[in-house]
Length: 387
Image 1 (cartoon, rainbow, N blue to C red):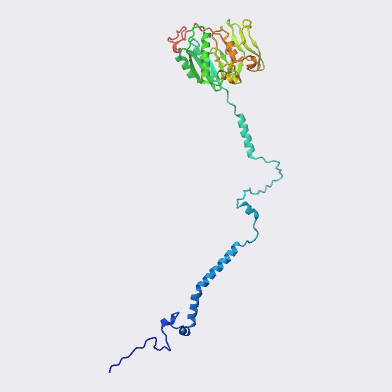
Image 2: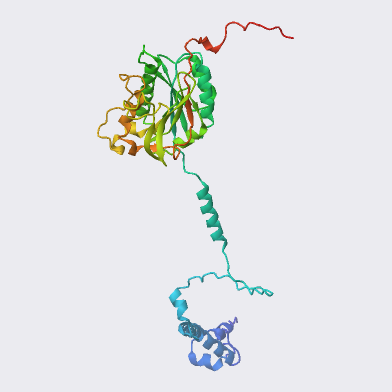
């Protein structure tokens, strides 16, 4: 007869001595009483740590945070009030202390190098000369035998004068090639002007129109400087041109003139007490007729008088020109009367007017031939044989 044997379940097999492993390690069993009764002490300790670990970590972090916060706001020691006032500004740099020991020497004064530098700069600035006044030299010229000689001689004298200087050379009708070539070779700053007004009279009248053309050129271009009428046949010294730069309004000086007979010299010009004009050197013939006894090359004036009448208080603004309607020898005095009122507005140069700085020579060159291009067409004839 067949029999059926049932296998006992592990839950009910030998329940008194063994228990299931899965049941042993479960924190919660089917019966609280059975788990607590049969669990070992190690299992209980692990359960307590698992339940309270997160709380302990939280309180520990909170504890250290509070300690750090309290230490951070607590002030230890004394804080310098100067540091708070300065606001962490950088201290001013100070030179290091140097212990200077001198053997038997006494330092009485200390001179900084900056003072000597300033002194040298001041002395060097005092050595710089102020700018010189410009000289405006007016020279009328015309075709004659000695023209090349006169222009070259005057050009070389002007070349030695300190700049600034402008030489206004005036020709009539047209610019000649010979004159232009001479002016280029002198090395002097020049202006070649042409007088278009025809003059059929004497060379004196020709010179009047040419000087007026130069005055018109100065007035139109408003050249600033000291105007001096320097005829090409006169002889001048360098001291004369240097003295012209001291003129403020109108300057005059004596001129030595060679008489027509060429046997004596005549002195014409001012008599001075220092730089004040108190009289005139003159001859018997023109004593009662001329107001100012001055040669055409014996005076100079400021060019602004021509184009700035308000500066000099001129009551009229008509052009200042030389007159060709007066007799020969009166062009100088009639022109000067337009520039100054009397001797109080004149300056005698040099002081005392005791030096002759230019000479007026009367040379007869009418019979001399004016070669074209200053070149001789034929060779000179040999009068003496060469030995």
